[in-house]
Length: 214
Image (cartoon, rainbow, N blue to C red; front, side, top):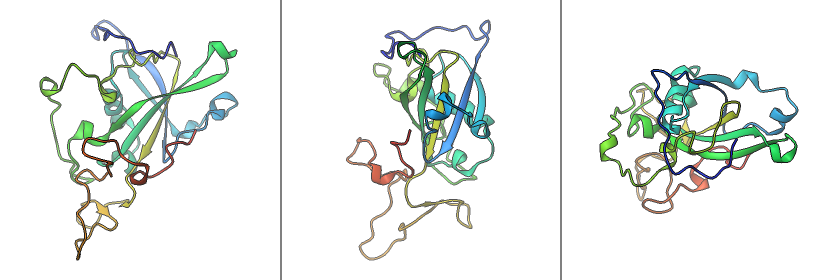
């Protein structure tokens, strides 16, 4: 892991002539793997996924690559899943001890569109020309901007909104606890995640797992 300060310019990689590099990725539902597992071992090999990509890949692209090669675990494929990324690396300023740095978060809907069902997620094309290119959101920052380098480990925490029942209901639609319509009942959020306010970030109360786990 290099200097954590993001780079101001996106790298240009000729993918036709540049070989991708390996990222040893460790995926866990509900929490991150503990740092001590990388320092003292053994590595959590049962949760490891090997992916290959380039330094100009965004977190959104990394997630797309990961989902295409990951085992058929329901949480990994869930259209309401949230994926949080963390780099684990040997810190030269700490005599080679391992350190970690949060990179960002990507939701399934960021690559699939608004959620449909487990078997039929709502499709959506990524329309880059309609996005605000003057701002850089977490999922659109590249590995190079995030100072992620070959040799770093990548930890991924997968979470679902509280109340989501896995697997899906009998008709293939998502089942959300308390989502039934009754007297005084409010409809569930459109994307399954609670929000503090319009445009705000989700609250811990709307997330499953423990975001603070390390």
